Length: 168
Image 1 (cartoon, rainbow, N blue to C red):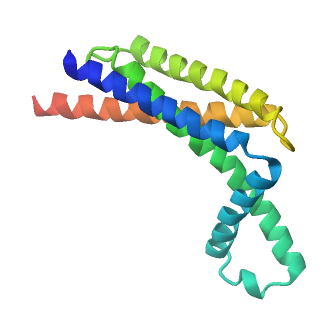
Image 2: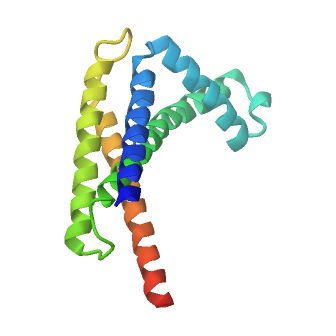
């Protein structure tokens, strides 16, 4: 029982730390956020298009623009996938190893609701940051990311259970 309490405390600290990191990204002004995104985008562009520097300026702008949008939205997805993983792991500490469909649904629903509420609050927060605005699309991307994270945890738990069953 002591290990579970320690695990819960560690997970709460990790969840709060991760939420704080997301909050920090959302607190960045449009210029700061775009600058960080552009640094990542240029690295991605050079990976997917090694001859990028030899292209015309017009071609570079088109490729950069398309890639930048994807990088920003993938960033949202990944941030919230991790939040979904951490939240699901926390919720899983309240269930016995005997996994049931109801247990999996509760973890998925609980993690999904947590991520959804935080994503909405995050977008509202962005509405108060210079040059930023809340977007419903981002909330949906965040929710999908959180659900992906929860599903990852549920699949891993299922695989562990199957391995334990096969070893018995």
